[in-house]
Image (cartoon, one colour):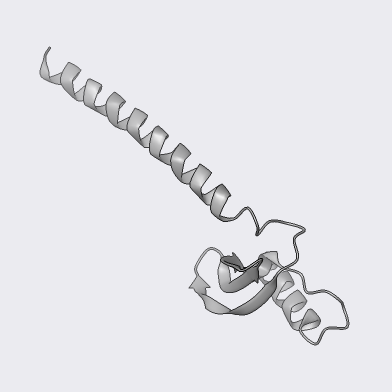
Length: 97
């Protein structure tokens, strides 16, 4: 096997390993966020920080589990809640930035 073939084989092996790792990471993420999906009701217990792509990250609690979600993905219910309009305005602003 010459040098070029060896390098090609290493690249193929690395791609296969990366694909396996990405699949495992996606499965782990899906499992970890199973209770924190669209349409689910949860309690926001705090702010967790800010991400350049995701915006403000909040800490949510549901069934004793803690999850971290982008504020821009949330909706406050009911509309009479004092946080409804500030969160809605943030979601609209974040979506149009």
